[in-house]
Image (cartoon, rainbow, N blue to C red; front, side):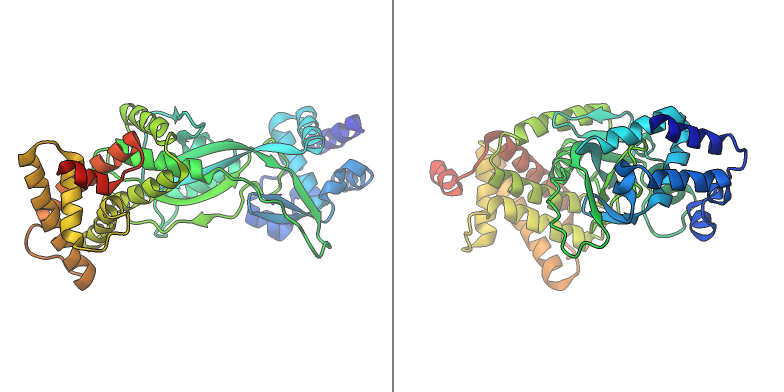
Amino acid sequence: MTNKLIEHLDRILNSGSLLSLSPIEKAIYGPSWSKLDEGEALIEYLKTVDDYTYFDGHLQLIGNSGGSINYLNLADWLIERASVVGSVQTEKELSDYINSNYYKAYAIMLLANTHIDNEFEFHNGVKLMRAYSVNNKWFTQSVQVNSYGQALPLPKTDCILVCPFQHTKLHWLNTDVKINQPKIDIPYSSLEEVKACLVLARPLGQGLQSIATSVVITDNIPIIQSISGWSLHSFKMPPLAPSILNIEMNTANEILKRFHKLDEKNRTKVLSQVERLNGYSSGASMVDKSIDLRICIESIFLDDGNKEQLRYTLSLRAALFLSEDIDERKDIVSKMKKAYDVTSTAVHTGRMPSKNVELLPEVAGLARKAILKIIEIGDINWQEVELQSK
């Protein structure tokens, strides 16, 4: 059987009649090989092999989505792949897929208008890499079209966060009425953690905006639709910022190691706080940035449900938590109170006040310092912080 498939593929490759068609052309006219006698013979051969019924009127799932496939789709994948790596290797890749219950997949996060000096692997297995490094031709072609031939208002994607994982092989007949789809554990949370740590490692104002997440597989795996459905993020305009430096990647990796020592409750809380700080560090309007900063500092210093004298309590806790020096504490209290008033105006009126707006970058820096300290020491009991000062 193995040799027969290789022979069919070799006949088509050696026919000299293959044309390179775009996906749209292929959808309209069909693959160029499908008009050949050799192409029809390949389809008929595939129908005789029991192992290939996986691809006969089935749903093939990847991530949280999938597509309907048939023998024509399988044959087209085989021919496309064989034209790149040869018939023998293509047959092996198909056989490996059929004989395994799992395959390697990649959770990816697109970063908006972000550039890197070099690729980097973090201690949780996530890689920060250039988008064209992914071995998936449809993905890399889409990135190139969006970067160089697209006039729509979508940010360019130069680099991505990637996390490999084992994906269960999932096929169902199209005629199945009830499909008990198992939950695929996609490591999107690992991507979010690395993104947050990169935000904390970079200078304030150089945030990272993510466009979307998805699951992709490499070209050597016969998943006909090799990119799952996209989960679009509600992102803000990216700031104008230089490339992410290697020293920032190393710093983010050290923050990540400490972050993983937190319990789940505090990890979730910190991620939420960093996302708001990241909103402040975006290219959004000053009003939106102020609202994000307000939510961020309240999340840090008022997370115990204290609703009394919010402005005073927030300012006092920030001062006690971030400094031992009495004069510096007084300065922090003053700036936090003024920043609280500035952000209150933004929240309640949708406009920025005329005074004290220039204090917001410094207050954002204090918020960043507080988050890093929380990552370092873990859970904070604000009543104890207040009582120890007395």
